[in-house]
Every structure is written in C-alpha cells, then in structure tokens.
Amino acid sequence: MIAVQTAEIVAKEGTGSYAGRRVLLLGGLGFIGSNLARALVANGAEVSILDNFLPDHGANWFNLSGIREQVQVHLGDLRSGEALAQLVQDQAVIFNIAAQTSHSDSMLDPLLDLDINARGNLLLLEACRHHNPSARIVFVGTRAFYGTPAALPVNEEAALQPQDVYAANRLAAEQYHLIYHRHYGLPVTSLRLGNLYGPRAQMRHPRYNVLNFFIRQALEGRQIQVYGSGSQRRDYVYVADACKALMQAGLDPAALGRVYNIGSGQAHGFLTLVEQIVELAGSGSIQQVDWPAGAKAYDVGDFVMDISRIGRELGWVPDTELNAGLSQTIEFYREHATHYWT
Image 1 (cartoon, rainbow, N blue to C red):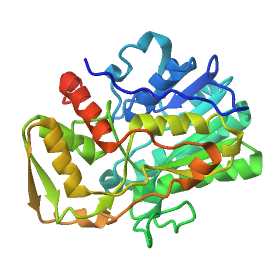
Image 2 (cartoon, rainbow, N blue to C red; image 1 turned 180 degrees about the horizontal axis):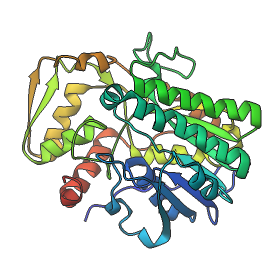
Image 3 (tube, rainbow, N blue to C red; image 1 turned 90 degrees about the vertical axis):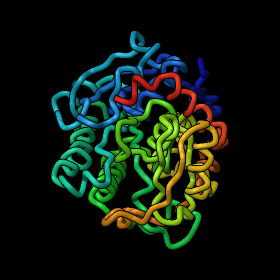
Image 4 (cartoon, rainbow, N blue to C red; image 1 turned 180 degrees about the vertical axis):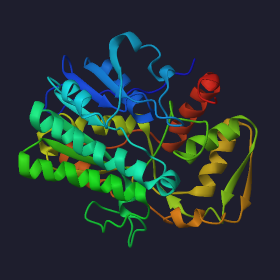
C-alpha cells in the first residue's frame, strides 16, 4: 500500500495549533477538501464538512476512508442560508472550498455558476457576520483570476483579467470576502491556488483537472492528447503542500486581510510533464494534435506563480518535488482506481 503524504503543520510561535479547534470545510468531500480534512484530523481538529454532491463534481465518500468516523458530514448546499447560519456557529476556522470549478461549464450555464460561485459566497459571509463574526475564514481562489499574464512570475499585484465566467465569479467572491474584512472586520484570508495535482481528485472526466485525468489515461494504457506544441510552461503544486498553506493561513494572524499565491514557483514544460507521467506510470502514449475549436480560448500560455509573499509573511514553502508528487499520485490511483474511475 502506498503511503500518501499528509500535511503536518509546525505552527509558528504565537499562532497556536489545530488541536481541539472546531473547523468547518465547505466542499470537504472533494479533491482539496478531503485532503485538507485528513490533514486537519491528523492535527487534532474537530472537523465538520458541508458538501452537496453536485453531479459530475469531485465529492466522493471514499475520500474520507479511514477518517469517516472522525468527521461530521452534512449534506447541504452553500446556497442555503439557513444551513449556513447553523453550521458556522462556534466554528473557529472556516475553509471555503465549495465551488463549481469548470471553466467550460461556466460558459454553458453562467447563471448556475453565478449562483454557486458568487451568491453562495455572499450567503456564507452574511451567515458569519450575523452568527460568528470571529471565525477565521480562508477563501480558496484560483490562478485564473490573472488570465493571460503580462510578465512572469505572476505576483499578487499583477493585473486581474479573468477570461471566463467561472474566473469572474470566483474573483467576485474573493472581493466579497475582502470587502467583509474591511467593512465588518471578518478575519479573512484568500489563497489563489495554482495547478494542483495529487490523490483524491475527480477522475471521470478532464473538465476540472486535466493533469490528474492524464494520469488515469496513462494508467489505462491510453493515448494522451496534447494540444498544439505543448511548449507552454506551468507550475504544479502537490495537494498536500497546498493544504499546509491553507492550514497556516487559518492560524497565523499575519494572514488577516491578505491574498497569497500558492504554487511551486517552478516552470515545467507541459509536454515534458506528460512524458514524465507516461514514464512513471509505465504505460500510455502521447499524441500531439491541433487545438480543438474553442479550446484555445481557455489557454493562458505560460504561467508561473511568484510565491515569495507567503514565504516571507507566513513561512510557507512547498516541500514536494514534482517527480515525487507524481509518483505518489500515480501509485495512489493505481491502488484505488475502482473508487475514482466511475
């Protein structure tokens, strides 16, 4: 059985720990949320989860394998103000991970995306304002806020130019959080996550995470299609490293009102990455094809994050080298494929 890395937090002096703290995860049965739940349980937190099992998204009961009896799970929706009003009470930290995360789906049904990714976040903030204004809130944003960057690496002061409805609505949600911090004093932090990979992701289709889906294709011995030259450079961060950043942001007073990039800070060629996946999996092949009609519009070209701010202010740096992270991810899915392929 492969040992998959779990985030362990060594708290900075004066920031406390998660031991005995009540923590609420919105969207806690999906990719990021379940990995975070496991890390929080390992660090002694009392974890509650709200998830709505939105069709085709990443919620998966197997993600809680081994910790199911140690967390409370509520099946419900971010868009239910009544449910939120009850759940936020007495929570010390709230991780706001719930989202519709497909760029293409947001263009097909923009009003649904608006309802989940914008209105739902306002309902959460109102619930916190009225029922638990002291709860630390960590909002999970996305690199998609930046669109096509003018210069690399991309820092937090770069222009924000979302290129689809998903990114625009998620950016609005981030701004709601920061406004509620400035106007109402809610203790808020936003983390803009780069390209994540790792265990417990949705693997049925590639709409939410193409890198993990490529791992499935390689393990099944299938042909992986790379659009265009594959020369674009990206950075990739292992999910356990991202969870460490989230947990640090939920403890450290220096994070209040701040926005941080979460990535690896290292550029990797896309085609080279896919070749690495095929080599580590020991199966699969690669076919380079022309960009499909419409798909090019979602590509931002080269994108590498500047992660120096969070390193300087919170002391976070990613620990997992790409080859090691890919190896752990591949072995996890090789062992547990039946829980993720269907």
